[in-house]
Length: 151
Image (cartoon, rainbow, N blue to C red):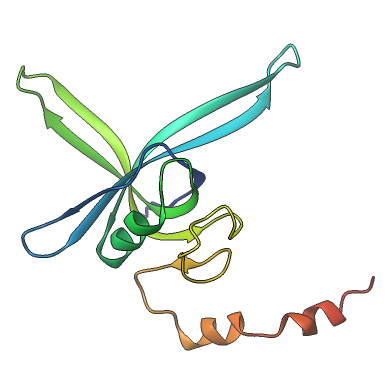
């Protein structure tokens, strides 16, 4: 049976990042993310629907997120869904869907983000090294593309 588990969300942090370090030295950062969908209801009135999601990140990404993000800052996250299940002390079964972060991107202008943030306006952080082909593709000059636009 084939399956695919990929989530991409753009939203704002609902709280400051919570960074913890395991006894083995692994960084774990938990963030809350709010995404809002704007739509028109049957009567034509504009409405908003906000969804709140918890996101867990690990390692270097956890360190960077905890250092450069605060409540209210925008972030684009990519990851996979994971269902956590547990039982309370009273014996009630609980579960919660969360995102396990695979990569993220800084979003917004430099002025709206911390002045100490590395990189440019949008910088992506991925745990896997990028292939040479992707690096070559990313470094192609923008001017060549713009010269071929017919207007």
